[in-house]
Image (cartoon, rainbow, N blue to C red; front, top):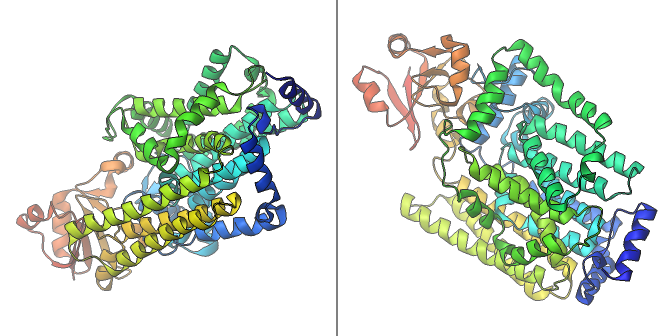
Length: 578
């Protein structure tokens, strides 16, 4: 370690400065030149940066109001808050008027509050998760710029904005976007605390922020927060042979703060529902990890492929960035945040790869720490924005063309909205490629332009996917709606299609189906009709509608189901008794 490095670190510790510039890695003239160019650019000056963030936010939210809710998850996480508002019960979540304890309530509460303020619609259903996912962009930029300079922060922002995986998950009404923000905010705050002077006010404050963010992460998706962060910290301390981070957690103030925020709901819902603790902690955590009871089985390498897809635009830079994160920080640093972030990404990948239940969004929390690592290295490469932009533009064109070919083969005639959104993909891709050619001498303008166009391009591709038939119950209900009055009885046979209830603003009576509602039905069996009771009631009715699985419909017709078909897609047939 050079004398200059040692002096810089000593000055930073003495002054309580959190940011350590690029020279803490190695002397690299290209890095200094690029960082200076970014610092001089008026686009990123504080007064102008607000306009940049507003523009990115406007683009980020651009398509949220026009996309229909997608089956199954978007419908589920739109319906649970609707039932909270309808029932007034903010403690016990319900889905289809049945107790639903698979996840904690933070997103349900936030969305229900949004409904009360702005009414129920697809964009209000998505507002919380899409909004909090967007906050990952300034979070990554601010943290990286604080520690390693604006050039590194801008490169990290660009890497996150062009990731197709981050864009798609962040724009869907899932729990993973908000969970990732709170978990990564925990990591970033913890890293700032560990890099602060020992026993300083800065250390204490950042650790309290970390404890608070961890509590919100627990309320977003459960106790996996403690597993991932605790395993990462343990592994880091073992490898570094350093137990100091454990002694700097500020347990006496942090644990009570975390419990004060996270514990009240768990206590209250357990008192009201004796079966909650066993189902939530055992079935939804341990059984989900150790068994295949949830029937989401994938090969062990599944998340490695997901990670490659997430990193495609900057995949070539990832190996070198990980090597430098592992070995390039000064050996006598009191804490090595990049190495810690790398370990967190590895722990997240290994943990979920070992799980018996695998869904693609699970490893989203690993992506922001990885783009920080890539951004710090990329700050020394003047061509990173150009290369990343070129690859992003090409990927958009390839994926757009591939989706068009697939849909043309499967569906024949492509719907007009689908074609329109694909044109949007092409425009965004061409804008990116044009920017890489014309703006390569201005790193900050190029990075911001590519990030903005990529945000719009990936959304356009998502909208094209949403326009494919059968992805949502919206179009089916538009056809069937004239036959559904406020007093019409609604039944669901051999299926529960999650997007129907949010659009109907009604729950359905289940017949011959349990699925994810099995626990709720076990708590209240009266909510499910037997086949015989349903047929007798149905055939005597003159104002009822049934949503039937096409595969089960022939069996129901043979058993005497009467009525006329009023709508159909590949997932559901709508039968009216009117």
